[in-house]
Structure formats: C-alpha cells, structure tokens
Length: 357
Image (cartoon, rainbow, N blue to C red):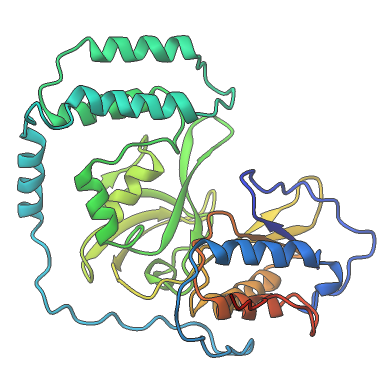
C-alpha cells in the first residue's frame, strides 16, 4: 500500500506507477511513507487554527461504524422563508447614500480581485485587454440598486468560464453559514461525458450522512431536485437547492452509475456533527490499480475515527494506494492530529514539540 500526501495548491496526480511487487494491504505502512513530509504537513495544517481545548480521547481503529447523533431539538422556530425573501428583496432595493460604498465601487472591487488573482488555465480565451474592456462596458451602464450590482458581478464572473470563481450576495452567504454545506451530506461535481455534455455527479459522501443512509452512492448522477430539472445548472446552484432548514425534507432524483436505474429519494436535512473526511475511489490510468482519495478538512474529535473507517472501506473497494489531501485544512485539535499521525508513523517518531517561553 502506498500513500501520497497533498498539502499544496496543485491537484493530486493519479498517474501513479504501480510497484512490481506491491506490499500487502495492511495499515502499518510507515515503511513507504516520507515521514518528514507527513510531520511537516500535519504541523502546518494544525498551526493554521490552533485551538485551546482539552485533548480528545483516543479512538480505537476497530470501533463500530460512525453513527451520527440525532440533532438537538431547536428551541426557536424554523426560519420563515417568506420573511427571508422579503428581507432580501428589501435589502436589494436599497440605494445607498453617497457616504457609503457605491454600487459602482462594489463592481469595481470584484473586477479588481479577479484582475489581480485570476489564473488563466488556457481553456478559455481570457486576456487583460478583454477583461479591461468588460469593466468599461459594465461601468458604462447605470447601476441603481445593489441587486443590479450583484447581477452584473455574477454575469461578469460567468464570462470567465470558471465554475470555481463565483460571487455570493450577503443573503446567499448568510444561508450558507446557517445551513449545512448541501443539507444532505453530498459533494456534487460537474463531469463532462463523451458527448461534451456536463453531468452532475456525486463525488463524495459524508459517512453515514442523510444521503448515504438513503441510498445515494458515489458516481450517482443528480437529475432533479424537488421536481426541478437540474440539467444545465452548475454544481453550486444544485447545492443551493439542496440546502434548507434543519429536519425539513428534500426530494432528489438520481441515476445510479452511468446507465443504471433512476430513483427518487426523499431525504431529511440534518444538522449533525459533520465528519471531516471525504473519500472516493479513483482508477489509475492504464493500470488495474485503484487509488483511495481521502480529504481531511479539519482535525476534530471525529477525524481519526472516520479516517480509519474511510481507509477500511476504500481497502474493501480495492484501493492499493492512498492519497491524503490536507489542502485547505482548517486546523483544529492538536491531539486529533497526533492520533492521526500515529496511524502512519512508527512508535517513537516525534510529531509535536512543546516550547516554554
């Protein structure tokens, strides 16, 4: 078993060359791990947001499968969507006074951020000259309301052809902060097929989350949400449709696999203690080997337990290599990072130094 650790800005490459004599699929894999890389990566991720907290108890690798707790009953009533929409409409109609940031300045700032930081991948025709012209065209129009400014920013960013460069209005950002990432615990990705059309595929699942429990599996295609056809929509738009208040229901229509049967599932949204582990199985190009990809988003009390579960499940699915992705890890509990390091390092390896000043 081989493991690749990702702690950089570039996406992991799955073009791995399988060994002539692969070692047996066992968890003691420190012999094929670059120990210094693991220690540095774990230390770097933990240093991002070092939290003062009591150490989490050690978790057994043979513990039963993760069962998310029932969410607590809310003491306050569920938010009224009608009131939310009215507030959003009132907010969008406000024309700010001259002493505040103007609508033109909001558009200008969004344009400047892209101009300074956008990385052209070469898939779309983008140039500083065309981007400058787009700013002049947009600012040459009258922007009377904040909602109009937001609409122009979204249209401007859409011209980049980059699904990961997007704009959230204050109301949209508030909803994302209030609810779960998708509401049912799935990660959706836009995947082009052989004909050039784009399908929305389930690329990751929260372990034993609402969608996973209902029968959604990796590789399923999302066809509709609450009866609304999602063909032509972006993954971000569909994720927004899946969001909602705690314990409400959403109906999704999926197609299992590439050519499997379709099924409609009613899934209850839940605010549970989310697993920080996302995983999926990837096939190595021109090789019968498979790679188990695991992304660890933070070091919380569930990190080690759910990482062990993910590794075991990926092994059962045929993974002979692992990728541990720590990019954009939020940090978290130091003890959780130490417990995860113990999965890969030999006894006696130093992973944490305490200094007194």
